Image (cartoon, rainbow, N blue to C red; front, side, top):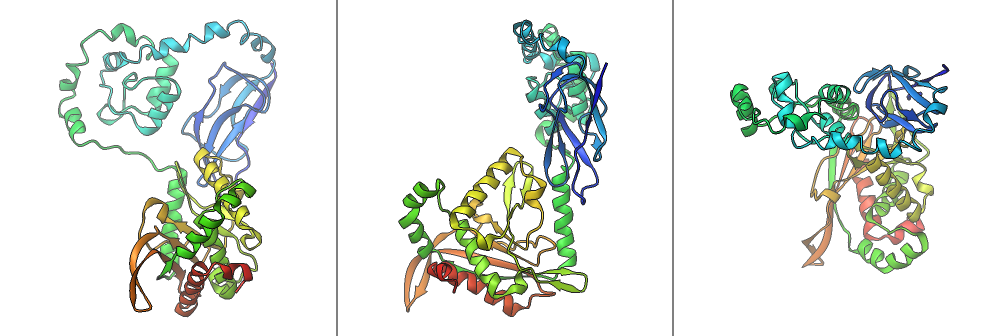
Length: 426
């Protein structure tokens, strides 16, 4: 028997450990070389670990939810068993296909089965358990919960899969026993239905975000300055060139590329806004790496547009679209998130009218962009309707004075209200 070890990939220097999220293969199942075996969550990204060789998954050294570190062995593959297993998919394929069906069939009845053996009613499934049940084709209520008030935990799902408790469910399904059980569980289930609660541990990403935001507020002297910008010129330019732009570059031109360009123009005029603090030193960056806050199913991430000053509008739009898709698919990598000299957060896509963004350490400033709405404004003594957007610049007052912050935001406003400035770098 020839064994190949599956190890945790190298993590970034700032990441000490990670958590195994979900094994996609079970012990005894055949695996192909480079097939994704498991997802590992760090406090920044989710990494996919591929199989180093083809064979049979002989052993899981670490289970779902367990902590691991770089280069740690988490599973073992028997490569000699590959030959014996490879033919199986050809003949038994049809036979193995129905196999999962029984597990799914009991779905309706499992609720009745689960309580009987364990004496615990099947309660609300925790999020992690729900995902595992969905992936395994197990219907809600098919697993007995051992958590508080009968809540279904990941361990319950794993145990049900190993023992096959979910499959026999159909036999117990007819039994009306489950109805008496709620009363036995007494007030707990009743109260749970009226005032449900779920206690879910923070993901590593969420915990890291919380830590950094708290760190930002504790170490920075944060102050925010506001201004309003008339977006009519930008909207008019977009409308005028949208069709040609999309035909030429294969991507639509959005507002964010204008905000990035306007921010870079302001940072060039007021370099301290693009600087950072290192101990008692101020580090002035001669490059412009702009972080773009992007929402993802796992939480907020801030991928970096590197050398944004050298990017065209099309380059910016394509990169932002790429980041958005990667965030949605959970494919954001460590390289995408490393660095950054200034950030932009667009709460406007969610309808935010005004907010005070929190600085992303070790940066010293962040621009908050909001929803563009038609508002009444005064121009030349006349009240007119204009599409207005409120901008917010949060900055570290330790190194950025109010003068630079205000003038920097005004420079962004001027660039947006007269986009031609961006072409002539004025």
